Length: 114
Length: 110
Image 1 (cartoon, rainbow over the protein chains, first blue to last red):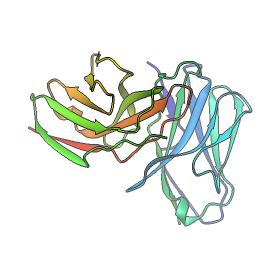
Image 2 (cartoon, rainbow over the protein chains, first blue to last red; image 1 turned 180 degrees about the vertical axis):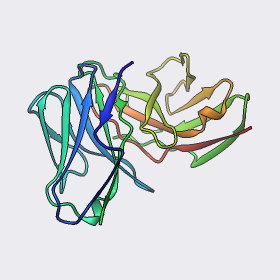
Image 3 (cartoon, one colour; image 1 turned 90 degrees about the vertical axis):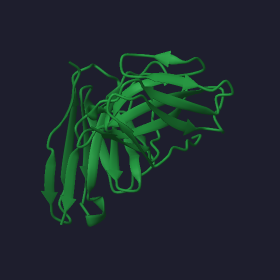
């Protein structure tokens, strides 16, 4: 069974803390994605990566960075967490080739920044 | 990215068919129509996709209008487990990312 796992389901951090959200996929996918989901705003793409050490900005990259040192792992980093980064964070992966390759999503991490 | 329009919510009864509409009047020739759904407390999951012809799979059917300006996701026999938010997404043939709209919240009554 294909799987995308995220390090935590729930996380509570304080303003100014550095936060790491980890995502691992076991499907040998080239593409990996980080989204955030907020009520009324839907899912918005933060960053994606199509290869190890490669990254592309999504629609809302401000305040975030990413790291992809290994093909199966994609990390989202909040350098200095702020309350407006309280959200549900979703990781996804897909194959690189083919326009219709489905994205597989993890269960999400609900982050609260106090 | 071309835009899609879906009703905010729909309601149906268990074991009845459900037709979820999507309008995409600005679709381009290279846009694929994708459907994903998000069950409560889970990440989205792929349902089906198509380009021009109607498509069937084990989860659903996708009916695409001849001018491609609209499509309909069909759940042939809804179950309680089908209660979810359904997203209709246009994806350019060369693009890697998905752009999610607000989707349709489907409620299934027992």
